[in-house]
Length: 223
Image (cartoon, rainbow, N blue to C red):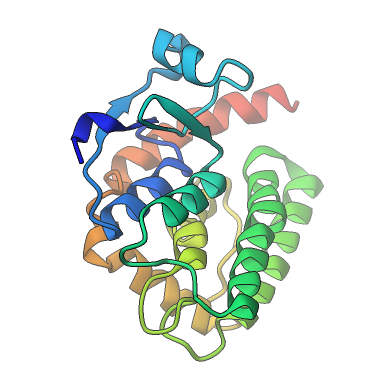
């Protein structure tokens, strides 16, 4: 397969783009990465995602697929090697449930803690801790959500370990409590140190400074 047949349109600081990079790397799929300048969206992005104009976008044989979790499922169904979803239908449904839980519960509450002020910020942080504790229950005593290897939920949720720590430092909130969620905290460490995944992440210090500026803009807008 030619590297030209698979393109990924992303943005270096995006929390969603690493999901797609991780999946492509785990499945050993060659691809061309196209870095987007989000304030000045490229003609390529406008062409392939004219409705939402967002990244990430996977382009396979000139056909675009948008939204990171949908992209992961597309990759899984298109390239069968190194599967990230279990074969068992029930386990597959459970993986999709937890990925959706991350997207609909964990991410919005962490984002609220990041963008709000005062009581609203504390409310968001409390909801985030509650949601992350629920997420921990899905991990149980396993090394990864995928069992002994990285799977769909690990890819969907793993980047939160990096992003939440940045939110904690900038917004001065507590999200990942190491005493009340030791299993989840240890899991974040395993995921973010996994070699293939680690190499796709931006340097934490640069990402921290980028988000400091982003935080100022968002909190000013909410005032």
